[in-house]
Amino acid sequence: MAKCQKSSRETQPKPHNPFPSLTTKKIPSRFTHAPPRSLTSGGGGRPPPLVRGGGLPPLREAKRVVLVRHGQSTWNAEGRIQGSSDISVLTPKGESQAETSRLMLLSDSFDACFTSPLARSRRTAEIIWADRDDDLIPDSDLREIDLYSFQGLLKNEGKERYGVIYRQWQKNAANFSIDGHYPVRELWDRAQNCWERILAHEGKSVLVVAHNAVNQALVASSLGLGTEYFRILLQSNCGASVLDFTPQAGGGPPAVCLNRLNQTPNSPVASGSSAGRKTSKRIILACQGATQNSAEIGVSGMGYAPLNMLGIIQSQKTAELLLDQKVNGILCSPQVAAFDTATTICEVQEAADCLGADCVPRYVEMKKLLELEIDDAFQTKQKSFGEIAQSGWLGSMEYKTLEELWNQCLDLTMDYMSSFHLDDGSISVIDFPDGPKGRAGTIAVLSAARVRHWVIESMVNGVAAA
Image 1 (cartoon, rainbow, N blue to C red):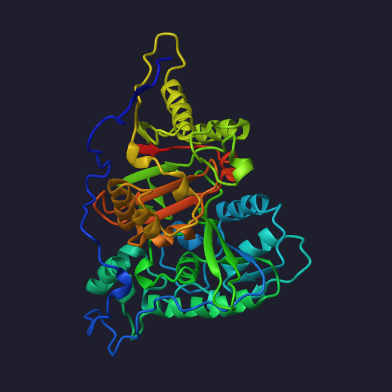
Image 2: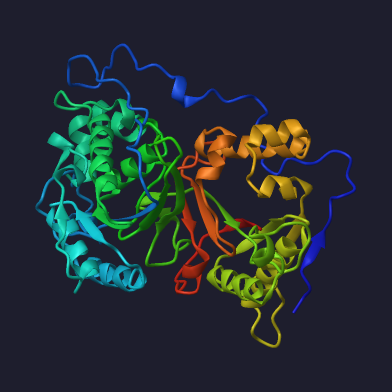
């Protein structure tokens, strides 16, 4: 097996920006946009105000909420627009996906299960909830987005019949109007209502089984993100997202951390699409495994500590998960744990296509980038990103690179980063359906504990960063 080709850039005077499509121009905050004065997409009347994610009710104790989308339905398989209609049911594949989700969540001790009343969601909840004693809690606000005249149409029929209105639904869903309604804005209102009831439940761990759009709205509204984030946080069939809520002193709204996003029963990197949306470019972010000082200080990757035994296993499992992914290049931090994780992925990639005696190993380029090295103070998350930058712990280029990537992917300020949790050995998949210069369309954050459960079927070309 050929040795992975590695090159170091520590000595170069000017760091190279690994994301050339990102500029240093400050991207305006989407939270300051005013609603348009008029819309041209059918449905008259003054539009309701854009929802920016209202405050959540205060909590007395910590709570975890797991959101799961229903399994594949008959209308999913046919390519029909479902909305809040209640005609479709689970396909055999959908039933199988729900069963896999049940096994995936078997060790979780849920105190309650809220579900959409629609048949495809309720059946998924019944399979996952199985023999638990407590009854399901139906909530009509958990139904899928109301799409009115679109419901029941094949997607190509919607395009043919509604023209401009359908294009607005595809390109500008937050301002989309049909039959006098603004479906996405109505959905965000419903999500806020749902959080009032879900968080008021006395249980410490709550399961919610619903739909793609409403689960997107639940995730986004919990983080204070508005309707412009529709279709950014997509939910695949039986994809699970985990939100942790922590009480705040003084009785204010709880702190929210997205622990996992769209963790699916199947491989997160299979095929060239996520939640049915085709992607043109994809970045896979691999978090290094646990290090020898992780247990002592409670923060992974501090300093230059090497991987411990668990970290070595995690890096091997990550490499197995990416086994059939044709990775052409790997960018990694120069810190030893990240470098060793990247090396493991590189070696497995090069060996994957070279099992015969006469084959020539595939070359995978691996580069260390100083821009991916994060100082100890940064990793402790004791300060905001702005404070760390001002203190001098992060160089100006490091901070700009992180800020630009963060803005490019989600159009968020750096202070939001603490709301997204990454475990040792986890991976994140970021899809760019509109190309590398477009905004990220789908993001999946996957915990290390689940990596070893995936069986890879097919992959697309990509770049991995450790």
